[in-house]
Image (cartoon, rainbow, N blue to C red; front, top):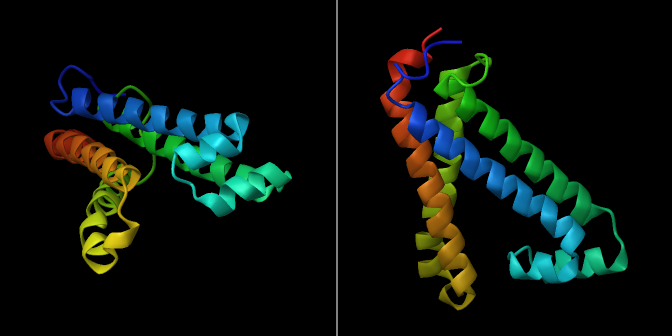
Length: 149
């Protein structure tokens, strides 16, 4: 592992990693919270009803998303030097950053196309995910030289 203190992006990437861990834990909490949690966190009525029926799909989908978010956190921590170097670190951080930013920005054209689907959850979740992407972007940019193999 390289020197975390010498990496100017480590603070940003550590914050980004913890944000991803938080998002993963919230997804996993939905499994235990049941249909009302799925509704509150915007998973949609179909997912909430499926969870209420005891269908396994909401649990599996939510676990998959939580797992992906934990992998993303590991990439952030690796980029910060807190974990051993992961494969394709630069590429992984760029892709993760792009996904977060695109998910945050996709709200704008969707709102223009279908404003009737805009609600406070759509606005807040898009802003939150955009902030996640901005944190990952800042960390990746600042740590770029330290991310080289």
